[in-house]
Length: 432
Image (cartoon, rainbow, N blue to C red; front, side, top):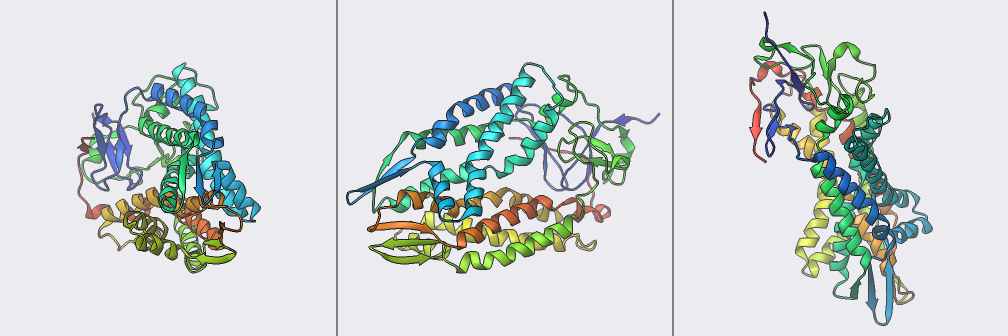
């Protein structure tokens, strides 16, 4: 009689592996592409519940209270997060205003509310039918909330204006910092796999994966070769014959590969290449001093920091605003060219690069958040004021298209024709 075991599938390279449950403090990674597959978290549900509740309580003060006040030559001005968005809207930068509103205000609140509802139900051992689609939506929206990037923008704004203004820190900045830390803590404490198994099995996690014969995964075997596919939302292993139907756990569409992944990614990458030109050559900010306007591009702002000795901040902005977008575009080009069956070299490194592109996408919004703060904090009438310039819209479009390109790209396509070149048999277990 053949021995049957439970299996998992790597979401990045489709490698079929025996399922293992690492102890607390350890994780398991795919030996072929390095993707972390499991890392159990202690008291994941209760921590998420407490943190989300705390985040909801502190949300309104963080968004509505003034962050800080700038004083210079008898003038003073303060602002909160909402005012920086209203300023974009009043100056007819509607797309920029919408982008900042969603990423810094709306989505953080939506995510905190969703996590509170999900963790509260799991804590009370309640499993209503809306729990799975709610958690699915949470995971899809999580990447687009950027409070931590906004906080870094606040820090850079402080450093930029420290020499020319007196800065008074208001209660809002401490509340907003706490909100960012809470949001990061939720992401760290949440065990996605454990949440899904609780939802799927109504509080009784089981190892009911698709069983296969042990001899079938003795070498390099992929889910596609065994007629199995992975739900990329909840991680459930399913039969490939269910393609086009809905996952019985989370309700997501089942597909062996993201439909039209390559063509969608090409379209988004080419679009971002078009937008990145005006984003860098057109002015992104205008400073009026005694009625004389002075427009500056992204590069001008970076040069300003280097000339004033703020080398670290200049390097941070240079990396986030110029290097990161260019790296994402070039990196996606390399990944797209690697979908050819003959392109089997350095696939592990390319897959790691794909994960890096997906992770750093949001940090390009840094310059936009800095401008959002400066336009409301430095408004001293005829003496001096700062305004948004046209490149801001193009820059937001570059961020949106490159992030979307990384989401639509399916890295498994690179691995589909290279299994015969690899030799893997065991899971790699990592310390934290």
